[in-house]
Length: 293
Ligand SMILES: NC(=O)c1ccc[n+]([C@@H]2O[C@H](COP(=O)([O-])OP(=O)(O)OC[C@H]3O[C@@H](n4cnc5c(N)ncnc54)[C@H](OP(=O)(O)O)[C@@H]3O)[C@@H](O)[C@H]2O)c1
Image (cartoon, rainbow, N blue to C red; front, top):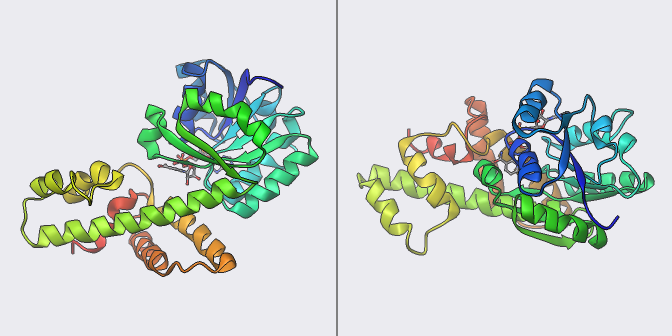
């Protein structure tokens, strides 16, 4: 294969729906989609064209590139393996690009399973959130085969990647996403403490954010979540349940590689506290809720 001409997309959720749309609109590909809840696939087809398939296997058939964006390790196995899975339908040399945030272990497992079917699997989790997916401004961190990466890189740059890098062999993309999530957890908790402090001090927080947002404390989280944290709005974005999943993956990997993740472990406990209060569907910036009581 010298060029990607057709694609399949499995998992049209908050992230996958708009990403699949960019493959059509920006990259000009013919896209076949599969979604577990068929109504979402039908709605997607009426917006972007293309075709909805009844199984991942049918969606993958004939596609040069098969992108996935489902929930966790088991969801990934569910759509990849078995008689109706992607690997049952993928053609020889098809490149499977997994945007799910999952473990490095499942990435290696899928890479091996793909090779047995003469296909290629790249782990390629993303960062940039719901707005990054909608605006086609995601960062993509990949692991796997260089030749396959070279084929998909220009397509994803056209469609939704503002930055995309191959970090190393299978699992390296997921490991990079773990680094990303450790950073985000620390930044969001720091921001939550700082804003709760400012509110308790009786400061005009709009003014505070306007000035410190131009200095050394500026961050994506401050720019995009500072105002809504002060206003107590969390009904959007990256759900607490996903962050708990991601930080559990970090804990497992740290237990293997010996990294000290003391701070991240504490923040994971804070997220579990939110979950036990029924807040697992809120944006991760809801950490400030623990401090505002
Ligand atoms: N949301 C963010 O800001 C963000 C940012 C970066 C990375 N991520 C990661 O991206 C992935 C998707 O997140 P999302 O926010 O798009 O989630 P979402 O809106 O809940 O969408 C999940 C998608 O996966 C499908 N799915 C889940 N389990 C499945 C299974 N067992 N079999 C078949 N399909 C299944 C869902 O199908 P149904 O429609 O039938 O439920 C849906 O299409 C997660 O790994 C998340 O951690 C999310």
